[in-house]
Image (cartoon, rainbow, N blue to C red; front, side):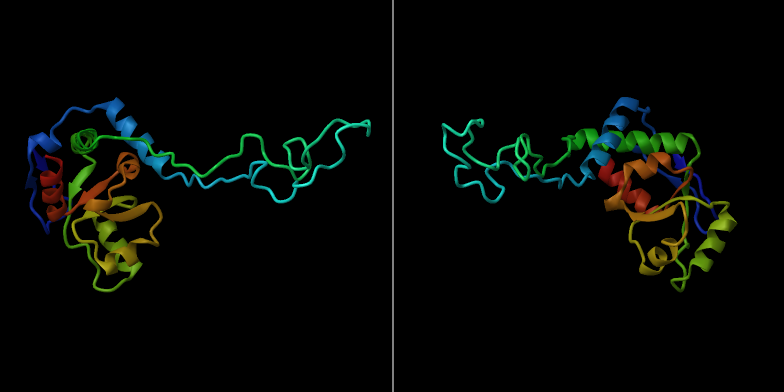
Length: 202
């Protein structure tokens, strides 16, 4: 398999079929994307039970003779300012995904991107200054307005220049976002990042 070049600064790169030539496994990719999005949920909601709210130590009135329903505390769920019956607690929404499943899903995504012509090899996009104008000019020359750029070593000038471009993002090989990979119309990748992925996903 070959990753086609997006500019003249780099030649097409020969890559292994075991990583970039796999069949598309829709169910496995779906599991990866859903798991990634679920892990991003905060899960910080917190409420107090009747034992955690303040007050309620004294019995409101005597057990018998008042004509009212018996009560032992003013902090029960039926009372105003009382605790919550089934109080929400901080939790993790993360889903378990084995390493082999993760690598297989990522191989499936990159293989499909290459098959559809959405994965292109690029080099020399790092601007000399952290200026968005310079990076936009380079992307326009490639015919790219939105997408994702994967680099082996994210340069500071590149990250600063790309953060103001709507719909365009830069990430390293170690911080890949499967949701962005699936939704990006064009995925640009440097030769170093491609070789890093080939070694890591094999």
